[in-house]
Length: 163
Image 1 (cartoon, one colour):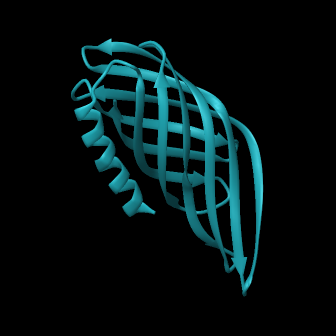
Image 2 (tube, rainbow, N blue to C red; image 1 turned 180 degrees about the vertical axis):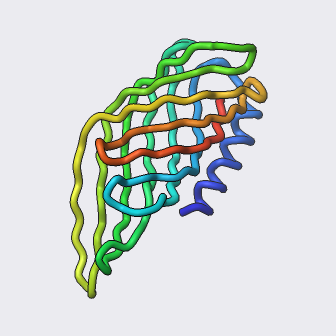
């Protein structure tokens, strides 16, 4: 999966530079760390996302990714997240924006133990805060904290490509 994200990111970078326009479409990838209140330690997360920026202050964004994989009581657990959110931002310096997000997400956990498997899901509100720095008109980086569930936090760093 990570190889696909890297390949997609490289493709998006070349496409964004070749067809740079002011139409507001963007996409990116994030790597981060999730903390579940009921599980010791942090788990590695990866997310791909795409969005459309209506104005400099407002965008809509969809994402899909993993919040982490871990073992609990001998069972293997993989967690995934699908989300859609509104992102509001404001410029605080020449190339630096602060932003907040509010949205809806579906969380899914796949569990396997001794040859048996099952899954469960939950849906709810998604909240987040972050900062974005523009390197060029087409490439920026993000640092973001999100709360996909009442017992889960995620901190991630992302690369964003605008086309």
